[in-house]
Length: 195
Image 1 (cartoon, helix red, strand yellow):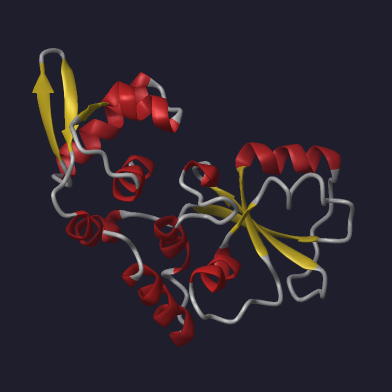
Image 2 (cartoon, rainbow, N blue to C red):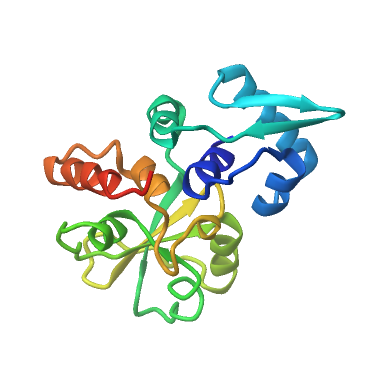
């Protein structure tokens, strides 16, 4: 459900769309999209209507209001966090496939200072591929060459701007951080959204 909502908020479509069209865009099966439509309908987040045998999602008139309503129900996309050495021969595996995330991405979108430990987001599949090549590589997060690797519950590339994770997923991944500078930067980032 979360990925479908973020897709709707970031890439508004001008007309109603059925679950097949949305599923194809997100790479989800018909069964997954059926469950997604059921959840969206039950939560009354968006309007879903029947068109013959198909259900269609009616685009919201005000995406900012939809975000305000949905945000408390949404979770961080980050499933797990790992720290690896940037100098351990990983350059061809993680950094090139990962998208800038975490505080690194927030500093990209706002005036927040760039963190000393960069962060990237990857899929579970990408992380497992990396572990097959470089097992036992985790380092302490304070090491000078550490790289933060966030394993996401959905593909961060779905909504990314060339090399950086999208603003809404980033917000969800950092909203739990209790740091006034981060909180202010997150609000600044949302204000820049083209709602």
